[in-house]
Amino acid sequence: MPEAAQLTDLNDRSREIFRRLVETYIETGEPVGSRTIARGLEQALSAASVRNVMQDLEQLGLLESPHASAGRVPTHTGLRMFVDGLLEIGEVSAEERAEIEKLHEDRDGDLARALDHAGETLSGLSRCASLVFAPKREAPVRHLEIVPLNQASALVVLVTEDGSVENRMIQPPPGLTPSAMREAANFLNAMMVGRTLSESKDAVGREIERRRRELDATARALVEAGVAVWDGDDASEPDRLLVRGRANLLAGAAADDLERMRVLLDDLERKRDMAQLLDLAREGEGVRIFIGSENKLFSLSGSTLVISPYMNADRKLVGAIGVIGPTRLNYGRIVPIVDYTARMIGEVLAGRGRPRRDPARG
Image (cartoon, rainbow, N blue to C red; front, top):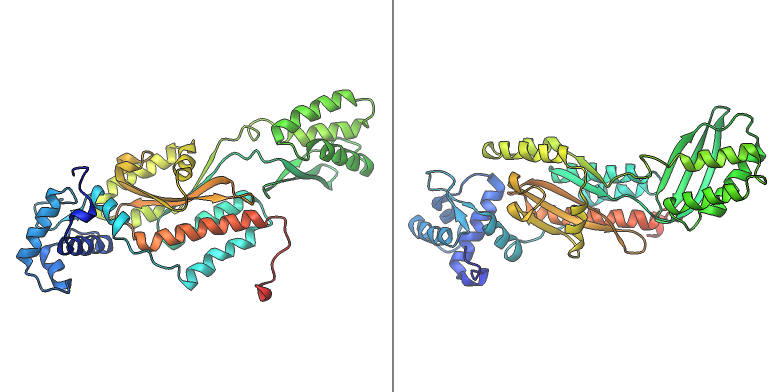
């Protein structure tokens, strides 16, 4: 399709035929014939007249014939033109809204589980595979607590300023006393609050050396255990990609799409460093749609990626959520669902650690 070709280059008749063909294709997944289009037009046109317009649209690169049949499907270029100029965005239904708003229940829990729940919800509502990109967190520490469970184990609870909560099990040193527990927790809070984990480790290490004689031996061992529990693999945790609903890709694929969807599934299994997802979302506000080869991550699959960033309480972009599937997605329905889910994650992050709102008071 020539670069100069735009939706405005189409007359009203061509635009209406093109719109109806794309909508029918998205609904059925099958090539659309001229007779099908002619029957649905408000203005009476013969199938032959519709066929002539479809041929013109094919010459513009907006349609193609996948087989020898007379039916046509939109090209990726045609889908892009449809999404940019003709797509009618629907509303999130009351039922869908209620399902997404259940994410508020995760506000005080583990952030990873909350994001996984968001992905599961989005996958179920969209009937696609959902992608949740959760980058490595480097938020400053707000509070640390050490909770004894029994003589052989204790729980370290770490709360960061972005509202995330992490729990790790440790083995306390023998002979632990309540006073040593309090001393260790007080020491760690004094050293870690306002610092990221990587900053805290260096600062705590230096302070332990400086105050080695002052710290009780068991308290010192507990301090070291409490910090070390985030050391190693977890401290250098890579960006995480949470994928839910892989089966939806195959279940919703037409026969011709099955192999491409299998390629996409292989891509999802192999790719773990997905920082590019955040780059894609960062380039614009709200939901973004990448069709076919526009999607650099999965260009071989002929897939569509619908993605939106989500923000923390400070309105800083911290991750992205979206769906991926065949190019014949129901864009008008899925785009608002992705957008609302992303905004709900932002509300969850902004509300972590705050008192719950009273539903009766709104």
